[in-house]
Image (cartoon, rainbow, N blue to C red; front, side, top):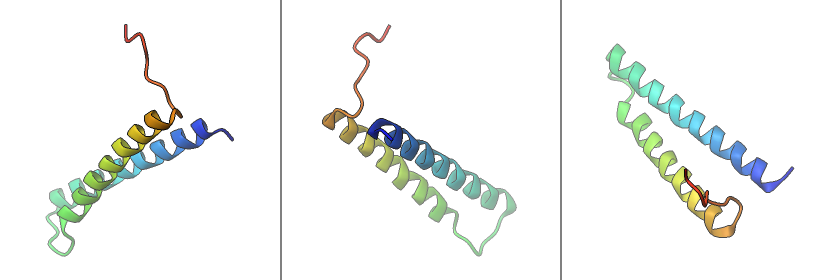
Length: 72
């Protein structure tokens, strides 16, 4: 497997985990549960979003992915 495929797989899994945490926080907010803090799930979402951005910067810096030179 190539490094690009593994990188894309990790990014997709992280984005799915972000969506899962966002959905869990929404479910807790709508249901009105007090036993589990909604901020835990929202905090995880923010943490993994920062991780995705950092991974993109590292991949750009190391040359695993290349930016589009012609954006139009």
